[in-house]
Length: 165
Picture 1 (spheres, one colour):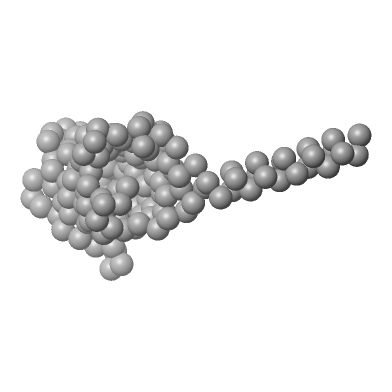
Picture 2 (cartoon, helix red, strand yellow):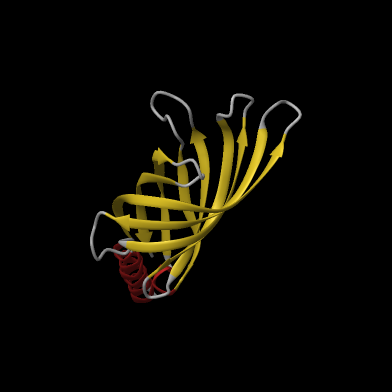
């Protein structure tokens, strides 16, 4: 009985250690560009507006050959504008794919805009599912817009971490 208990404890320790070692947290950074495809704007009674849009995403990680080095995305977003045209709230999602056709679903939310620290738009993003090599990957991070174009397209930087389970 004592041998079985000791054996069970050893097996659990080995399995637990393998699970912990298999999970790694890696930092990442890169740049992104968005290209606006369509925009629908609804005026709000308070003088603001709700802007719903679709856009393409192109991103490049700072680690050439890394898991997030070259990606494209098909995205949807909505931003609520205050009376002065400043983004007050927003969010959306993308399906992001690498060159091999593997990909993941990504959400984003607007956290700040129109301030000295964040003159364009800044926010938080993460993943909620993946396929292929991204099936067991969890991603989270921040983004900061660095350029905004008249047609609604933009450019920015991202930072974050990912874990592969």
